[in-house]
Image (cartoon, rainbow, N blue to C red; front, side, top):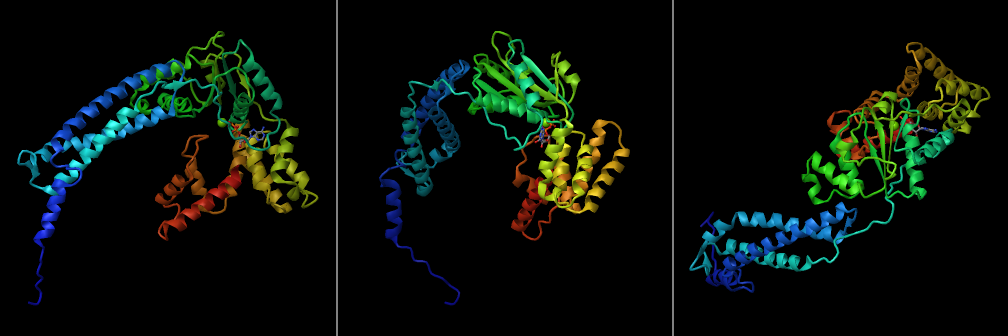
Amino acid sequence: MGGCVSFQISCDQVLNHAGSYLCGEGNYIQSLEKNLVALEKAMEDLKAKRDDLLQNVQIAEEGGLQRLNQIQVWFTRVETIENRFNDLYNTRNVELERLCFCGLCSQNLKLSFWYGRRVFYMLKEAEDLKSNGVFEVVAHQTTQLVVEERPLQATIFGQETMLERAWKHLMDDGTEIMGMYGMGGVGKTTLIAQINNKLRSTSCGFDVVIWVVVSKNLQVERIQDEIAEKLRLNGGEWSQKDESQKAIYIHTFMRKKRFVLLLDDIWRKVDLKKIGVPFLTRENKCKVIFTTRSREVCGHMEVDDPMEVQCITEKDAWDLFQKKVGQRTLKSHAEILGKARKVARKCRGLPLALNVIGEAMACKKTLQEWDHAIDALTSYAVEFAGMEDEILPVLKYSYDNLKGEQIKSCFRYCTLYPEDYQIDKDKLIDYWICEGIIDGNRGRERAVNHGYMIIRKLVNAFC
Ligand SMILES: Nc1ncnc2c1ncn2[C@@H]1O[C@H](COP(=O)(O)OP(=O)(O)O)[C@@H](O)[C@H]1O
Ligand SMILES: [Mg+2]
């Protein structure tokens, strides 16, 4: 007997199972054919209803209204059930072939039972959705001005006059498009962000204010997607549209709105028509503002009187630098103040350099460290010519100050992203681990924590 197992399945048990599959409350097997036909019909009605509603919603949206959230939820539910129905329908023939005795029984009771059950419940769900899909109103007017607040650094020095000038120019009835240019790090993004925030806090009669970071790699469709997201036009069907359909959709919506479009950091001409931005006229009072490093780009955008964003004055630069270094360090030795002035002057009024170097010097409390900084900034500077290039040594000094090859590699990795790009911390750390910059062999949690520590150090060093 050793090694043998005997099975004893009672006849009662088998009959009980079969009985419950055949005569259970749903009677799913016997009603399968009938329920399938009913489900097909219900889905057909539901889809037709969805298409009609969608058409109404699109007409309303083109008229500048916004679809109701409850309609969007209903559309999503219909889409989900449609996908599930397609899956179910794919195996329809196989399931029907399994039936025997005129559809009263099945060659595989268990499979037919579960399939029949799915059909039964989906039919109920489709009918419920159909009866819930009655909407007297599909969209509503958005009365509030949609402006996202842009984050700004707490202490901004020496931009009040520039901001005032830019604002006055923008509000002038004759200004339709406005360009601001200046070298990298001079404060263009900061200035246009202040304009954005001012539009947010001041009622100027605009319906929408849209902020888009363009950057070097200009892609019309990406700009369209960002605009659509801000205007909440990117519902279900949006992703299926091509570039020109998206342009038409944006155009029909924006045509009815008084808008301001802020384009930060453009590197070449942006074809507004291609994006779908309506023509700017004195009558519609819509405006476009952009920033760029190049004056030439302003010409290509047909701006004859662009505004130059200039470095801040020596006095403002000194105030900013002191703020960044902190009084504790500046007063830690009688001679540091004088040396700090020299370092600040090396930054040539460029806010980016003042911020970066100021942060780097905040913890330097010995005269040797300050002498070394002046030395380094002076000797690198010899290798470069011109204002823009003189800033490089300033930034290089800050980079050299990062302790260790690993953090430097992590920093260099960040330069692969476009300027002003919102970098996802977790993804960035994953990339660092995948690239082998951070050792992932000693446990993921440990590597991720290490990644967070590096991010903190980088932020402290450069922001
Ligand atoms: N006037 C200012 N005062 C203080 N910090 C500033 C000022 N302008 C710019 N910054 C800071 O300098 C850095 C570079 O400014 P940003 O506006 O991004 O320059 P740009 O867009 O011209 O490259 C940012 O960290 C910003 O917060
Ligand atoms: Mg910028």
